[in-house]
Image 1 (cartoon, rainbow, N blue to C red):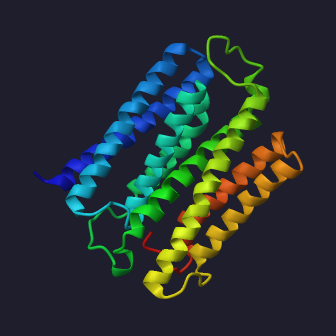
Image 2 (image 1 turned 180 degrees about the horizontal axis):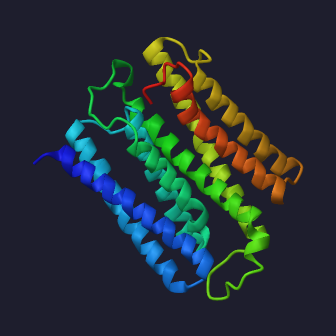
Length: 273
């Protein structure tokens, strides 16, 4: 059996499924039909299952954890967004959450589809137990930030949403949206702290220094500072509402640049990730 073809087939089925789910969530926003919510959720669940199988197949075929190059991290990043979305959607039962989070998920996995999918030997610097720990933490952290950004976009659009008739759908009020975005950001920030710590330990083992202001490290620090300021202002100054939502979206923009922008535009020791 050609596992590469199996993985590729599962990946593109998941990609198509995420696209269909995104369209259904957008139609849900437009048409306000409960049946669309159930269809979108079911399609996304099936797509997530296929995506999980694709990652497992990749790992079996490569003989290692599939987190060591641009494609593998991108598709795992999308998987992390899907996982965090399903957890938050299950916990808070917001039918319209998918309208704002699924486009982020589709764009990230779409980016993965455009990268080189070939399986290459693991680089010596990545051949470490810290790979699974450091990168897995980053995946869930980034996924949480993506959900927070989607909820923040939902908050900014809430005035328009609440003028529409959504009596048949579960929908949070603005205060609850603000609270969920904060919780998702706080959880992502906690994991990001662990990402920074494990990354420093790994860097010392691989390159003989904990920190060297490599572009990836620098932008990770910038992202950490943005969310640290956001959480500090939230606790000390009561930052809420529209300003908090904008802060969350800016933070996620920094996450995206840390991953895609640095890899594309700046020479870095982390360019393979």
